[in-house]
Every structure is written in C-alpha cells, then in structure tokens.
Length: 131
Image (cartoon, rainbow, N blue to C red; front, top):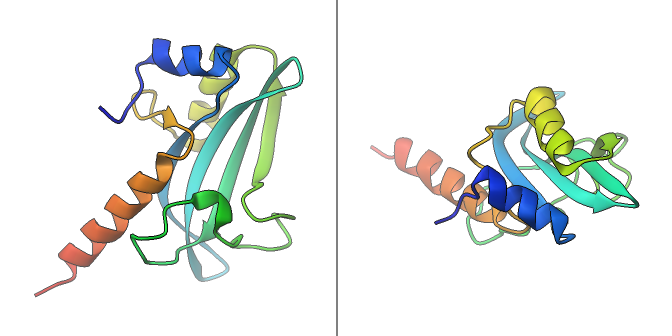
C-alpha cells in the first residue's frame, strides 16, 4: 500500500518524518516540469513547500529532490522548493498543503515515494502516446 491514511501521515510527521505528494505536470514560461508538495518537521512546527522541477522524462530517476528546479530564480537550491508556510501543527500543515496546492487528502506518501509516483506518471504518459 503506497498511500498513507490521514492518521499514518500525521504519525509520520509526529515522528519527525516528512510526507509528500506528487501533483503532476506543470509549465513555467513554456518549460515542461512536474510539481510536488512536501510537509516536513521544522523547528517547533512544520514547513510546507511546493517544488517545481524539470521533467526529466525518465522513469529510472525517482529522487525528486535531485531534479533541477524549473525556474532557477524561484528555487535557490535543487529540491528546496518554495516554502508556502511554517505552521504549528501537523494537521494544519496537511490542510494548508491540500488547500494551497490541490493535493489530495488521500494521496500522501512517505518521503521519497513521490518519485515512484513520478515514474508511474512517465510510464503512463508514454503508453498513451504509443500507437
């Protein structure tokens, strides 16, 4: 089972583990990319970040943190993303991420698993374009 229940996502955050969600394709200034959102423990609360990275179009590359930013001026370091907010509670962080990015409350995964979602996205896109 890939997706976390709400209780498991909150539990992961409570154990100082990040959760994330692959959101799909995005385009910035005509350049194709993909977007994902992450929620991670930060100081005495939680940070919510959205990441727009280049679409490498290769299912073998699954570590989204290493993908080059889609807009280098908007993302100072590879994988760091744009911080949307810092909040006090894990529940508030998930709700903010869902509201701000359109993330589904039923598709949160453990850190690193959004890359598997990206691989599925690439393979599905390829199968739809084959005759």
